[in-house]
Image (tube, rainbow, N blue to C red; front, side, top):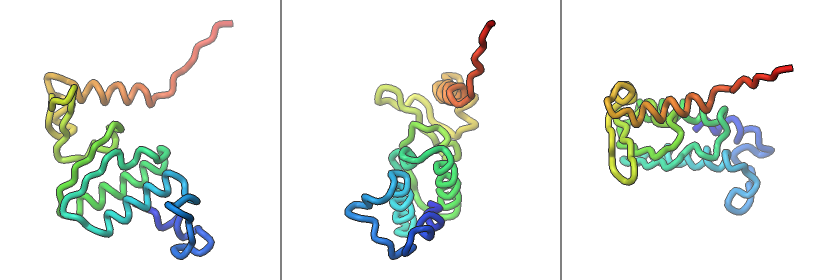
Length: 139
C-alpha cells in the first residue's frame, strides 16, 4: 500500500503512538495502513470495498499501483467493489450492476466494445468529469 514512506516520516517511525483508533492519522493514512495489514496477512480471498475512497488522487494512484502489483503476483481471489472505475480497470473480470442485476461482465477491453455499453458509458462519463472545463468569456 506504499505506506512505508509516510510511516518512516513519523517521529518514532513504526514505533510512533498514533492515538486511539489512529486518531492522529488522516483518513487516507488509516486506509493505506489497513490495506497494508491485509496484504501482509495474505488471505486466500480478499474483499476490497471502496478501498481507495478516502485517498486523494495522488495517493490513490500510488496505492492502486501497489495493489495492482500485489494482485498480479499473488494467487488469490479478489473481489473489488468500486465506484472509481480506475480502481477496477485491470481486473480480470468486471461485473457491471444496474438496479441489483449484473447487466455486463467481461474485461475492460471487452466491455469497452460491448453492445449494451453500460460500462463504456460510465467510463466516458468519468473521463469527461475528470477533464478540466474551459470557461469562455466575452468581453
